[in-house]
Image (cartoon, rainbow, N blue to C red):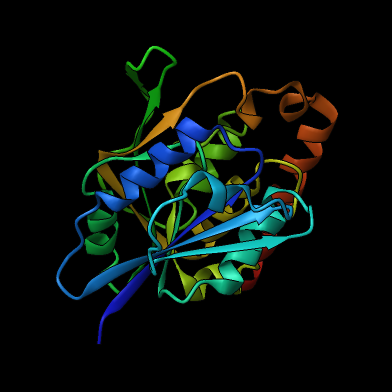
Amino acid sequence: MASLISVITPIYDPHPEYFRAAHASLVAQALPPGWSWEWIVQEDGETGIAEALLDQPADPRIRFARGRRGGVAITRNLGLARAEGTLIKNLDQDDVLTPGALARDIEALQDPATGWTTSRALDLLPDGTTAANDNDPAPGPIPPHTVTAYWRTHGHRLPVHPTTLCIRRTLAVALGGWMAVPGSDDTGLLIAAGTVARGHFIGEPGLLYRKWPGQVSAGDAHTEPTERALRMRLIEERAEQLAALFG
């Protein structure tokens, strides 16, 4: 029986060139024997823009869906509800998977004690060049609480990139999926997963994280101090309660 990894991409007002690049990077992935992927392209709205931008012969691996506007966290979770894979991989609409990214996630998650993975991410700059981050941990297992402890002591900044997350579906669902906050929903899920389950950091770059003026995290609303403090407070409290319940 074939194993399936579900790649979830929330869509809202996508940049056509960047969205098509995300698609191309997924199609180019080579998976281990016995594995296949599905792409859940979940629109935050009902325009059908994703289907229009990928106007090409039907690919049964791509599943388009639409829903009323609810924000990125709700959109990701609607995609999660539709996903049929045992593994769930995040891919934002403007980012690019590197060759072998899914295969490396799958390999790391063959260890039943590992609940989630992240990988090295390179910033993809507007001129097409890339830049590395300098706070990556050593490749290998990440014990529970490690990511949370770093986050707490480094101004709510993570040691790994939450956009690269690949997680067991059972764990993602048990934690309530992406956290329903206006921004930092991927941080909320990663902190929760890192509190209750062992992770694994993949040292090879798995994602090109596109930096451009239109990205949501570049907007003023994302860094507005009062709202950001509330998001971090809720993520922190969730981690504390999970630690109290599960050790």
